[in-house]
Image (tube, one colour):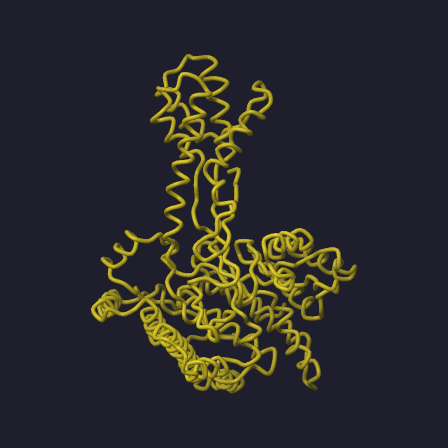
Length: 533
């Protein structure tokens, strides 16, 4: 790792890049949201105008030593609605993460094939076909405006580079405004641009997918050039990995966009290549305090690849993860994924598999605490329950009622339109399929937490409260507060926990069983993730 990369690593991890970030002026934000309210703009138009306004306000800033550029200089998004509008939206819809798209995987391979200019051309040609209705015309117009906003933002950085007499960067950025990238350096710069753009649009930090696969063609072209240098390429990859630290939502916990490496194809061939090993080496040398890459491993991965992954993980256990594709691919196939898509999976920061251009994930649809649920029932029902069986019946009924409420709530999930992201999704332009309405694979995840503590509470009820009968209901409930603070474990004197485990399964089925075969309102699947803690 050279001296410049060492400097940039320390600069980003110590949050010194935040010196460039300024607060959004409150009076501007209020005036903007009121203007859109007064104009009765559609949600698609609001997202587009808000995004392009953000880019207009942004300034071009380049950290000394950066070879790749792009960062946010405003610390918050422009509000798209007045406070009154937000309240009304929340009254009639279920909204999470501010209503924005949470997780998708843009089709970066398609972007690299034609560049921003090609996407603009596709949107224009689709609109000129003459078969679009008003909603489709509005979407295509919004895509056009968003991409042109990106081009103007690139111009700011090109101008800054020219002022600083960095002609290589100036020429790279000037070309990327309309053209596809012709070198790995240009490709990494274009990817960096889009990383920033997705954050500016409110989508957050998008995963980068199988980066060693879609960049490999460009990399091989580079290796044929007389001035090709592997060490320079490694430096550029290391900087690219570091750059996404600047997009982290919080300065307290540095994190970057996750890249997926390696794996195999459906015909059994290994997908490891020279670029895989360069990204792997870069992640190992950087040794970042968060996962930077995840390597797909399985039965078709060769011995050399296994050895290189093992060696890299010895250097950095924190920044390199492994995904067992022999487990995950069959699960995806069983869930209805086409064979090609299952073998093309990448991972998001939350560890959920995504497919380029074809996945929309709601990774945190809801969080349900078993402890809170049980305590609510105990507060209302414990005095009236004469034995453990009676309490079990009340708990089961409470789970069914909560399940009814959750089912109604989830049916009202609303996500704001995302015209910029739509341009990078399968069918987004050609079929005018706006991404917030769903795509091919639409996965929603519900999290059930505190299951272990809940099971111990059930044990306390069975083995102490009902068996010893020396507490009032109020005394028992109050005693749980201290036990929960100090941590709860299953005492050995209680013996087997089989009965309470079975009860937890019964309660889980009463609460979540209905979602097992139910389709969400995008036609996708619900998933339950159970957490012991």
